[in-house]
Length: 230
Image (cartoon, rainbow, N blue to C red):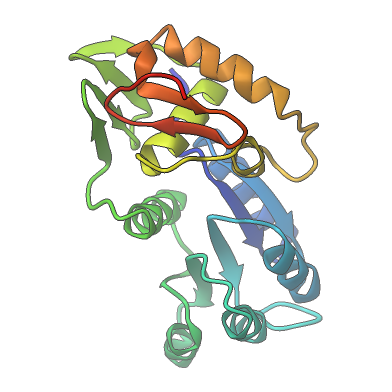
C-alpha cells in the first residue's frame, strides 16, 4: 500500500530550497500532486492560474511577501484553502495572515507530520467532511491510511486509481469532467493525457460495483450509489 493521501493538487511556496524540497517530497510521498515556487511572484502566478486544492505559503518570501500574495488571491476571489508558514516568535504575522484570509498556520520549526495533518484537515473541511473516512454505499475510503474497503473487504489500488476514486468520492453526486480530473490528479509538468482517465475508470469499475461510476456522455463521470450509464 502506498502512503496516505488525497487526489488533490497542492502548491508549496517556500524560498528556502531545502525546506521547499522536504515539503514537496513529504507531500508527494503522501499521495498528493505537488507543484512548487521559490518566490512570491511565481507563487502568486501559479496560484492565480492553476486549480490548486490547497496551498502551503511561507510569509517571508522574496519578490513579493506571502501576505501580499495571499491578499491578492483573496481579492481576486481565489478561494483555495491556504496554510501559512510563520516564524515561531512572530505572533503578529499569524494574526495578519489569518486576517488576510489564511485558513490555518504552522510555526517554524515544525514537524512534517503536523503539516500533513493540517493539510488533511483543510481538505476535509473544504470538501465538507469532518472525518478521515468517506463512505458511499458499500465502499469506504480512509484518506489518512489510503485504504479502500468494499463491503468490509480491503481492495488494493494503484496511486492513480486511488487519486481518481478519492476525487470522485469527495465530489459524490456531481459530474466531474475529464479535464478537471486531469488538472487535479497530475503535477504541472506531468505529461497529461485525458485518455488515461478512461483507463483508470475502467480499472476502478472492476474493483468496486461497476454501476457506481456513471459516464455522463460529453460531460464526464459521476460517482453515486449506483445507476445506469447515461
